[in-house]
Length: 406
View 1 (cartoon, rainbow, N blue to C red):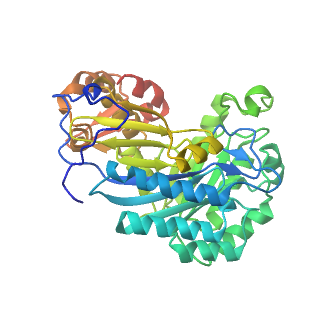
View 2 (view 1 turned 45 degrees about the vertical axis):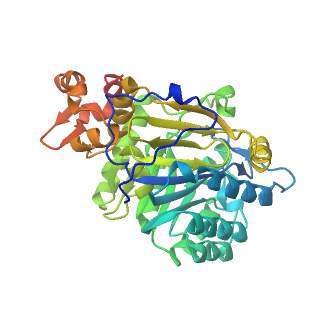
């Protein structure tokens, strides 16, 4: 990685408000990832609070989106000058509604304008029911080397309750086709679903195991604000105790097959952990482009967060017309940096290297000594010579552990 620290001043931000802090000294920027947001989907799921918008009449402004994406990437290059991209994640929404030609243009755009690591991980999310074998082949030919499949469940009744557009047959078919072409695959599975019991939950997990999947993301269904489920909450959701029991049994079941939990929601066989996700949780940097995308970028004496305009149509219009495409920029206050670091790091099963704290925050590790001691005395945090990590108790009460560092 180039060791030159890029320094910039936003055109629309008074340089006098940049919080150059003597308490922050980031000697070398952390690894850098790129996130690309595709904001459209075939149908909005009732639990989804992401920036996703159901397409109408099978139509959305795909060409304009690709054009705006290219413009936004070029406008952002000064923020990441001299840095190498270690991972790319194309998420949504449902990226697999994009044509093969569009994905090809995106990857070509990245290769033209960015310094990609020779081993860069490039992931795209796909949903069963939105693509065929030809499109998957085209995606891989373009340079995609990791595919994340939104299965959610193998139970057709549960899929209907979740508002998914696909059935289990389409899921198995999509996985089969993808596995014939590539082995770096993740599948998303949800648990604590309406009407779900322990057997139902483990049945989904066992089917995943039988498919010889190398990476699994297991998400506890939560009711988010401003979703359909928030207004019309199913009355047969598993309670917290049953959800926790499901989580424990999932981990035990996967561990037997050497699919190990390495993060709150992520399980993988050896060497198949997600580079992109690990960079997030290790407090790495990421540039986000596309409607509603967020960025976190480190500079010598400050850390900057940015978010793009949320509305896809307005984002496209403003980006193409060279108007404001940023919904907000903020400098992370020194007092908040330690909390943000621990908020991410404590999600990792093996914890995080102590040395990363100073490297990634630019702050001395003794700045959190008191809070570390409190967490340790509460038996929520384990500390050894090289690592911080949550204890089993801290893992179960992770929110309580994280709040100590507020």
